[in-house]
Length: 404
Ligand SMILES: Cc1cc2nc3c(=O)[nH]c(=O)nc-3n(C[C@H](O)[C@H](O)[C@H](O)COP(=O)(O)O)c2cc1C
Ligand code: SF4
Ligand code: SF4
Image (cartoon, rainbow, N blue to C red; front, side, top):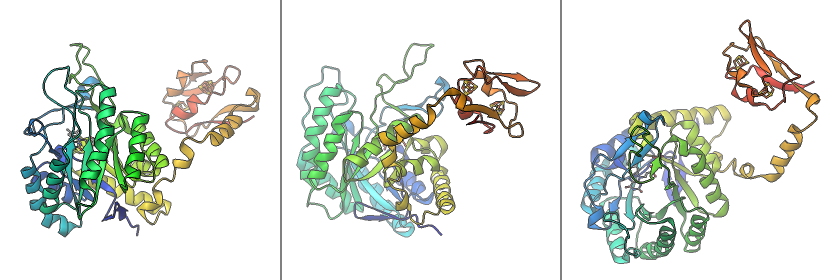
């Protein structure tokens, strides 16, 4: 039996899979579904600090399947809750969360101006009293922890948003430090390149235990028929975020001592394992639940437990950060480089005819070293440069580079 439970910021979670804040946890009914499908913790849809950002949730999600990016998403944040709506979500969900041993995370979202036209006025950090009042209200309503999402809003230029985020983080921490009985942490986007690493150090210096690293990486996709993006702000999500979010998680893990929750592009149990191996203690997801439905929590948990069983990981924490020492490792890179750069004649391409299904994918070889003959690839080792591409794309593992 594997133990999926894990500690994060002083909380014990029954498993490391978390519902991230968004429409999937924006009403008592949706939160109930997250809990019933096994999420270790549920982050309630954020409360907006300003009236202008407390819009009613409206459809605002465009999955990009029809634009060729299956499961990609552009969205316009779909409104934020009022403090009263969030308090109701928390208090109604509390008994079920207790029965199912799930944690409830209240969420505050502060950002620059969302509405209106450029040029936007300079934005001040949030008023500490407002932050404190709202956090205390969520704590009283039953939150086990508070997450404060610090985001510039896409209405700002990157340079202005870096400044806004940097100024706001200490304000938020000072506003809540020592004032809550429950733990709190900041949710920080990794859009701003090296700047967010500086923000992590600030958090650590100010005594924070953890951070939620997510993506506010700007990205766009176009409908070429209309020459327009589905949404006129470059706010892209989806499975394709997996690589950048893995790397951001790794960078956060090696550059700080903060425990990390990470979201962005975690669609399967393999993605969750991968994110944890990059350094995340918790793997959080939002848009895959909108795409596949709440069953995705159960699928991920089942896959995670099966993997741990197969690999002999007894506790979920055994996987956290396992890969980090190998991700940006020049020594290992050079060792591999030495291994793979030898005289061309020392190795040759070999085909396992039993494994080969005759699919023909390997004929893409740019050196024309493979042609199909009677349903099987025929290899010309004179033309073959031993680049290894065909070995990596063969779906049947029928090709290998071997010693000559
Ligand atoms: C429609 C939508 C609304 C969201 N609303 C919020 C929010 O109110 N507060 C917040 O902190 N994050 C919000 N997020 C961000 C998610 O919590 C999550 O960090 C992000 O979507 C990356 O995870 P994913 O790739 O699993 O979607 C929202 C995401 C989506 C797609
Ligand atoms: S190893 Fe590279 S060069 Fe050789 S057959 Fe495969 S793809 Fe072509
Ligand atoms: S890609 Fe692999 S399975 Fe397909 S024809 Fe080539 S060797 Fe055979």
